[in-house]
Image 1: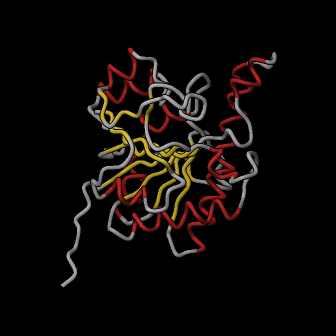
Image 2: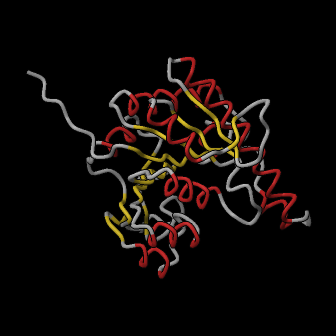
Length: 240
């Protein structure tokens, strides 16, 4: 008899960087990278777990970088929000091609291509088994997509933030640059803030702390990691 493993969480919010959609290119959207991510999300959905997703827009534009070069910060941030909508539509297409029913909801209304964000409607979609992609950030400049992810997770009562990155957890320093960097298995919210660890911005971490929302940071590029995190297996670093 095959033993059935019960998922640890009923509803999760997956935070993905825009760069994850660019694959090896480093910019733009790679259809194969989208397909790979979609397959991993479907694995989780097939367990009966309700999945919401927030994607960054860094593969297309980063508002902070444009602002640093002289562009008005609000304008640059709104452009970044539009980039997240493009990414959300790309992921939606990849998910629906493999039979995963999906909805994209945007913080900025553009009803010809996506639903406006309505909390009760988003929860209903999740209850019906649809993957809900939240795009457009918070709808406000000066806030990151990390903060948007935490905000949406709290609003739809997700059990955890799954922060998918390029490394297998949180380190004392950038492990790509510093070979002596050590990985943390567990951290408290206040430790992340006090040590200046760049896993999420301070606003996002503080919001998680205030609402007792755990964060699991792991490597998206390792196949099966999202599923393992949802099953409660030891993956990456947990902040709680």
